[in-house]
Amino acid sequence: MKHAESSPSSNHRSPRNGAAAPLGGRRRFLEAAVTLPLLGLVACKVPVPGQGPPPDLYRLTPKSTFDPSLPTVGWQLVLETPLANAGIDTVRIGLQRAPTLFEYYAKANWSDRAPQMVQTLMIESFENSRRIVAVGRDSVALRADFVLKSELREFQAEYFDSAIPQVHIGMTVRLVQMPRRAIIGSKAFEARVPAQADRMTDIVDAFDEALGKVLRHIVEWTLTTGEAAYKKP
Image (cartoon, rainbow, N blue to C red; front, side, top):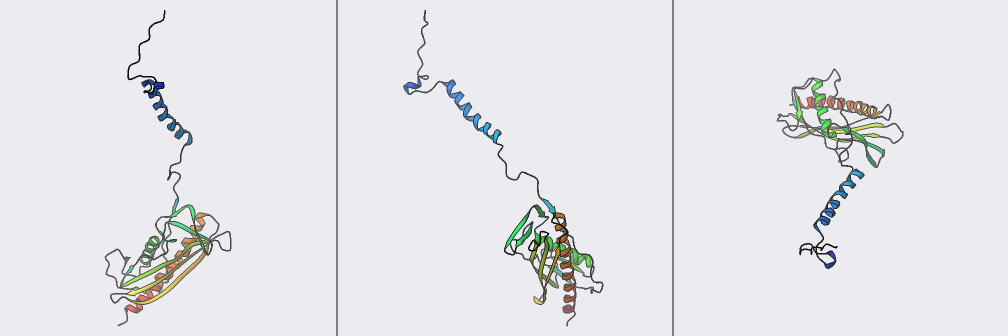
């Protein structure tokens, strides 16, 4: 004997008649819709920006040896942050394979933006000379007798003629006497040093040697030029 079927309520009408589907079927559909995208994410392992090992950081050293005949001066000096174009004004270490092409080494950075790093090393080099009363950056409240303005024009490793790079550093400086703001001298300094090998540590060593040569010349020229102007009546 067949049992009589209960008639469907108004909330559970047949989908064929245009009414809503049973609640159990709708729930299973929603669960599947949520689960499938999650399964896709697990399978694909989408990379997240910023992951991976950080770049190696390198810094250079100040100069500590100078001409013993340098004058000991009684005036104070402020060093402005060197100007630099956008290709150099960065923490990335620059290289050139052609004169019109500027690139960067992968996974290797300076510890600070190049102009700020060079400014700090210039200050430390003047201090290491032990021939000047006071020296500081332009952000320090120092009563300056002279201001040294500079521009960092070359700061890269060059592969123009060899598979082993040559580091090229070039700076121009102007010495300004205060308070009349008169430029009493300007000069360009440049150094090229070949790296021992095309390895990052050897390339940084070449940067250090080349910058050391430039810093030594800047310190010696500034102290000599400034002292001659300071003694004038």
